[in-house]
Image 1: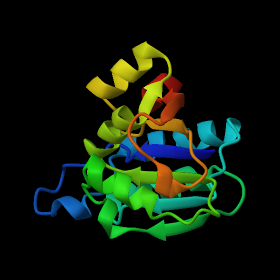
Image 2: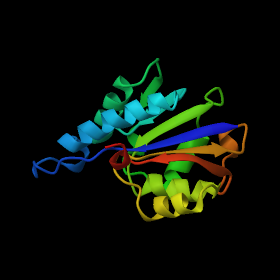
Image 3: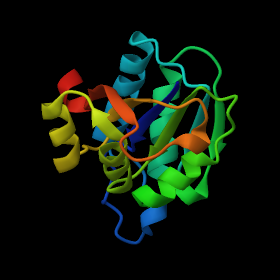
Length: 171
């Protein structure tokens, strides 16, 4: 059994129009939400073996702020391939993960993360799965239990939604 966690970057700033998309930082709300999500994950006992984080500034800032509220050390990998990746690319990325990793957290972007959750989850609370399909808010987290012993075995509908949390509900 493998567990996949998905964390969408928190709310980004659009104040400086001269910045390219990859360089956009978190907005003040995003900074607060990322920290709150880190506290939530720590309270839930979430401690992934490895974190793969998009190299986009807003994603890296989200993970740094969330991680600062969590205990323990995590193997962190900055992964450029996560930047704006679609669900097919994310699925291939996860399939290449080392099997010594039991719990993986991806910090990335929509629509790829939401699409990946929908593709993988065949089981879970219907209302929450519908919510993820319609809107995976900035800063939101989802956890998926995967019915496989190797990351290479992951396929559509092999997952069960374990949890979902949006930062708005923590305020």
